[in-house]
Image (cartoon, rainbow, N blue to C red; front, side, top):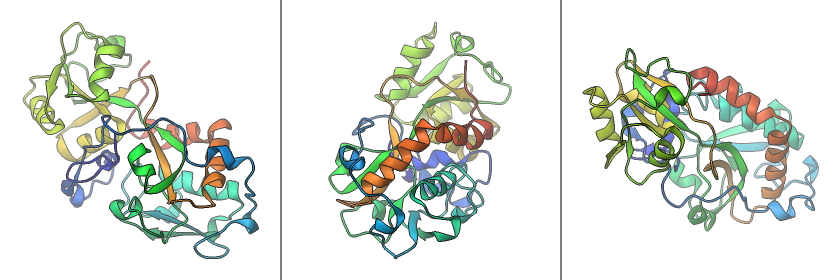
Length: 299
């Protein structure tokens, strides 16, 4: 998936059963697992080990301050209360964890509002790095740098309260369900390859059509990426619930921090993200802000 945005993109999902904002209507899913995604290889990885990443050696937009960009509103569960500075929400917490790895105190981190399209546009940046549910893709790498991925996008099953699959806790529990997904997506592949339902999955041209079928109770559930699942349950469905996240499978689509093309900071941010992944911090934050926020793991 490619990060949501106005009316047909991915970031959407981010919204969850939490503070759903009026402007959600402007957001849309699109994102979900389809085209132009790239593998986990980030720009600058090879030079990370050789780069000097001491705080004083970093080239920054504003000396002594790590400037982090994200869009506004900043949606949950990626942020909390539309306030990136509070350190709550997955991406806010990751940003401060990266800053800490680079040697910055929380007070030395500054946030700037950066619209999604501006973040990935081929132009000089007013931020050092940007976290905004932006999927790493080969196409985007032509305009900007990416750190290594800080979030592996997973697939999730969405339904409504009281449905035949509401409250199920395992993948095996879903085999008898009437499931659906958007045509040509990794979500559809997840149904056929991971869930392997006894009934042929229904395929829709858009997620919106799948949502309508779920509202009409023609299907039991929809498989979409986790960000989109949050969006659907928060903004599109009455009494919508996320049954759970499917186990990780195959090469994941990833969210990465965006940096200016050719930024000297890229290998250092990648090094920091890699450290957070290897020491378990990313997993811990995902559990705290995603799984416990309504997207439990299916066994």
